[in-house]
Image (cartoon, rainbow, N blue to C red):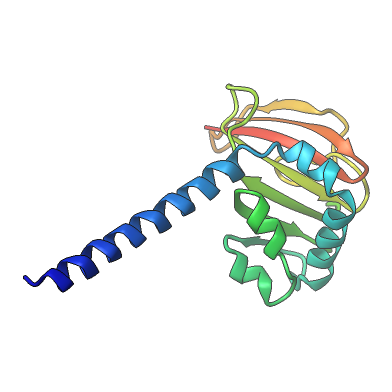
Length: 172
């Protein structure tokens, strides 16, 4: 192999490694962002994004789950949200009987409480807490015993600021 080919191949390998390191670093940094602090520090922007997501969602009384940024981009610009938070999925509930309109953002972050498996933030138009199913609730922590389908759920939430809440859940 010529000296030129060796230089080209080693340069390409080095570039691929650098790109991988940068992507992994960005992911780790996003996972370490405290979602409560992020909402507090970006409250106005977060409200605007949540309202646009709700307004532009055409779910017709169904829950819409968006697993990628591209799913939402056609309706709402969520670039900054995705670039700053480690988002797993965004769930939108609008115009459903007995359910408040809400945007629930599931994160890839580790929950604060080790007893829980999933965490995230949610926005409700009515500024109320919601349970794991999206129904308005007063209590901020509960355990669902799993009847009739034997699926147990632990769920808790806390208010961050008007309309915004942090949640943790475990389903087994």
